[in-house]
Length: 140
Image (cartoon, rainbow, N blue to C red; front, side, top):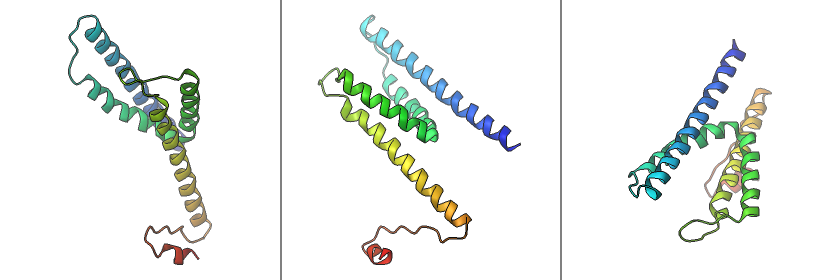
């Protein structure tokens, strides 16, 4: 039963990612055609694409280690192609590297949480992280 639920969850995540990806591509394509061919863009398409993008990215983030690899490949591709923003000519690597950093941090946090839960499972104390100024005293 557990494997069935796991497989269904994986299929559901993939369905969300594929559906949002397809809708985003279609929205951007339609917007491009309407803007540059017919000179009448639809207002709000960029916002709709952003909202769908959040779903696509963060459902994809559930596959953190895989996402880290994808984002690294994306960043290295961006470095090779030296892609720039259309209006200001800003190198896109400045925004695209944020994807890799975020994926790397998500992977790190996932590993830390895993280790914390594993240590608790074998009878150790939970990891206590405090963000106040007295935390250095507690650690030492």
